[in-house]
Length: 147
Image 1: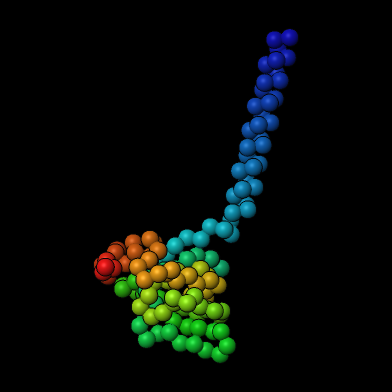
Image 2: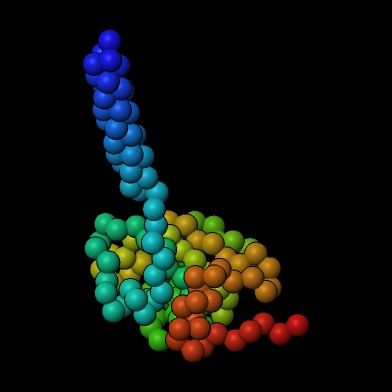
């Protein structure tokens, strides 16, 4: 009887370990496209990502670079003070998007141009994403908002 309990306990532990391994693998597989790493323009220029890699880029929209093309095609450059990356986006920009303002874009870096699939802008006059602030502070160009 004692040997049967020990054998059953080992079986339960083995099944639980296999179930845990399978669930961890399934969660990792499901999240593979949902994890987007943040990069500043300086990081993108120093180490360009693979063409198919989806990531987030953030910084300030460079002055004088916002150009609207045919239809909903928009091009501009994003900078962190140390480097500038050209960006193209097809769609409607957020209302608060503008030159000299903070932004974060999600997309791919292809042939030297960041092709954004999503653009986020600050939601009021004082907000800027933490990643963008950190990147700008690292470059020494961040200024605390007045007021």
